[in-house]
Image (cartoon, rainbow, N blue to C red; front, side, top):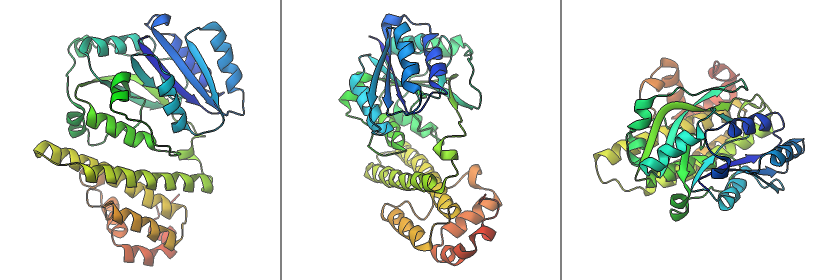
Length: 341
């Protein structure tokens, strides 16, 4: 078995069929890859839809869990995988037609541990073709994961933009933390930190569906607070990982600078969202105290054109002065007008 495509799913009846349709329309023999799906306690028609596909396509493997959480499911899917290479995809996302074989062959021919590619967001659910670039495919640049981190200041931490060699994943003992959300951030970071040989193809092979039902867009206050709490846990782990890295040369300094920038982006977002959800001053101060412990506050690394607008500099100046922030919290809706919606 060459490739295992791993899919966790919960209440995905609106999307799973389209995801599977794109995974079946591929330039790879059915015997060479498996589609391993784990249904994590869906209460809709997801399970029945998958079973219908399983009847038609022998390379689809189906398992069930009882709402254990997406990252527990991902770890179990890794153990179930039999392919030499692994690809993670979400049930509401999809892959370009006739692309899996191309990506897999590129990985095998160049003997790399990780192969990345471009992804783009969409609000549409429809098939798409990827744009072939022979020069890119035939002569890809081989780099290390650390080199990639140096080049990617705005790193995407999601897991659906790369293939990874299963033996490498197992040998490095890299797994997902059992967090509710955001565990892919540290997973991807650890992978790239350990990867000695990888390729990145600047071609869009994947689409992620921007669902209005996703928790990141959900307006329910409890779900938004849950997302914030998990984001704070992730920032803490991310910071501890950075703090343990030993800087040996100039390139490492650039890499660390990039990671600190990305960490501060997460922290900025978390604090703004705490303000948006009208958390109490004591709750925000407790969160800031925990961020201080790992060096994630104040925000000292939000530099560059992305954060050089007058408005964002103003926001950062308020957030970085905790006493000033506490004074302004009671009138937050006026002070943060334009950020709070």
